[in-house]
Amino acid sequence: MLPYVISSKLRRKLLTHYFTHPDEKYYVREIAALLSLDPGNLSKELRRLTEEGLFQEEPKGRIRFYRLNPRYPLYLELKQIIFKTEGIEGSLRQCVEKFPAIRLAFIYGSYAKGEERASSDIDLVVVGELDRRRFTSQIRALEERLGREINFTLYPDREFRTKLRAKGSFLADVTRGKKIILKGKLDEGID
Image (cartoon, rainbow, N blue to C red; front, top):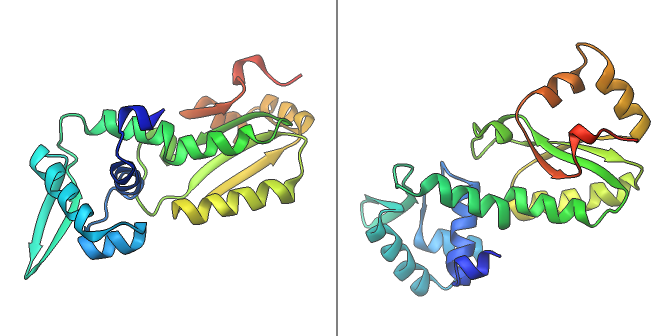
């Protein structure tokens, strides 16, 4: 979906990285090496995005650092698009879709509340009867790609139902809070 909205592959990689690391600033050669991009093309793109107002440039001596401008009028909208398609949310959604046995999966915690930092981990609840080792392997690969720690709790269906009904339980508290559903529906319950 994002390729239709943002047709430049370079721009998609750049925005995905910066929105998943919103507090970071990089100089051109640093981010080019990190994302395996051509420094010349990247420099031109950063200048365009800085002129547009999405990025801020911070000169330090002869080096220019670039960071996202959180005051950009469409900052939150772009962040949501990136997260739902290319970033953490989109990547986790694709990951859980690979496992038909997952009945429900959702993100909770600081990320779901929109209070995350670049160093924040991602908290995930997964419900279903699945191969834990295979799922863990997929999550570890995703952590490596996104540069973020993902902490997941896997519940078999019956255990999830039991803990969800227990008053004052961790799971009951989590489900009442802000969350991002990746697969399934919480209000339908688990049969």
